[in-house]
Length: 347
Image 1 (cartoon, one colour):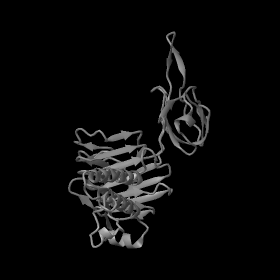
Image 2: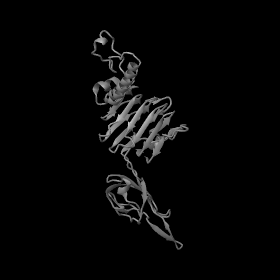
Image 3: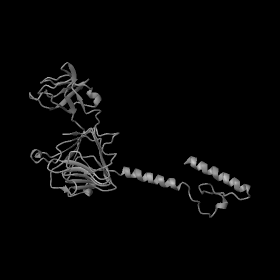
Image 4: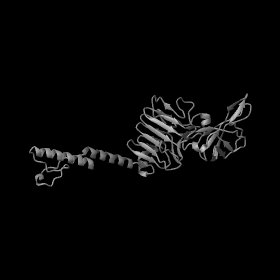
């Protein structure tokens, strides 16, 4: 403001000097319209400059007020206003923050719903979650991912949607969905040494700590046993992370090859894959009958918006009897530069 006022004063002084040089009388009022001279008596104040800047400042203040007006879901009045008969709607133009676990019949997001990334083990449980056109669901960002545990749980129930069907998590129209879980620099590696049956230590080709793996993560170890012998891929929990090694809570049930093997005088890398199956953001749901119905939850994004899902785990998913009901699904999105599936675990 000060440099602009100084510029105006200089300009006004120059114009006044030119006017005086031409025999005119200088206006005793200053650049802001303020005047204490007798010649100004009874004169209405001059228009205040920087009206556009003032409007922009007011607009910025309004934007700040809008951000400050984000409502916590734990607010009882907000909850009662948006959840008639358990069918909850985040209205267009409103911003809610999910700071508590909830169990509702259905959830439709028309405004903005932001997951509180400072809270651990929050759960959103609903028959379906729809981000409608113009809505935005945000669970972490690329710069500030959701490092704590977050669960979206889709229940089995009578509620359905004409476009998405039942038991879904999805968006349509210009909806925006951002899900960013704990980043893993790499989601898999290989055994560098053969691990014997009964062993609890895996020697790896890469340093698991550098990959972002942690104690408590679930990992899968692929089978390498020839088909003439009994072998299987197994899932284990990491007890501790070492330098290029993992210690498991449960011993291996079979041998898993690692490193190089010599075949006909030549050496080949023939090693079991070790896959990190743990993610901080979990999308799951009811699955007691999935073995015989073939139906779990499904996810879908359609329209002109986007879904950017990175480092999430989706389990008990897909609806085998129905076409277009998959674990992760961009439905006829055509060109969508912001649509991303990266580093996810589908189980």
